Length: 202
Image (cartoon, rainbow, N blue to C red):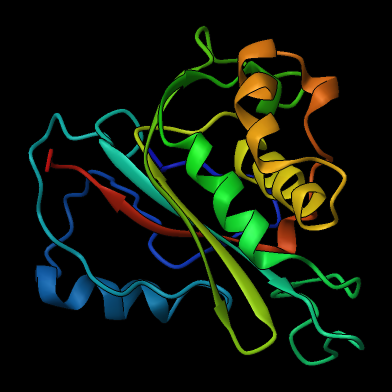
C-alpha cells in the first residue's frame, strides 16, 4: 500500500495512502469500515476513488509540516507527547527573521540526517513562517519535499537563533555551507506534525 512517508514518532493530521481493492463496500463506507478495524491512534477521515496510476508518495506536489514548541517555564504534562517543551525564553522576533531565509530553492544538505537516501538535497520551500499561540511557538513549512529529519533540524537551528547562539542573517551562509555541523540539533519528533499533502499544482 503506497503511503506518504514521514519520520517515526511524528504526528500526521493529513496523511494520505492509496490501495487497490475488489471490495463491494460503497466508497462512502470505506472510512467507517477501516476505522472499525484499526487501532484508535489511526482515524480515516475520507476515502475516494482515484486513477489506477495514482501513488500517494510519488505524486505529491506540496507538503506542509508544523513544529510546536512549548516555551513556557514549566512545560506541559498533558501535551508532553504532542509538543516539544523548551523552557529557556526564546527571542521570537529573531526566529521570525531567521525562518524567512529558508524560503526558495536551496541545497539543504546542512539540514538532513545521515542515512538520507534521496539522490538530491535540493528542495523548494514555498512558505516558511513562525507564529505564537499562547505559550506555543509554531513553525510551519510548505515545500515540494523534505529530507530525512529536515524540518526537525530547521526547527533546532531556529531555536539556536532564539537563544542568541546563531544570528538570523547567518542562516543563509549555513544553508550555502551544506555542512550539517553548522546547523542546529535535531529536535524530538513529538513536536512535529504532517499537516497537509497536496497533489495539484497551485
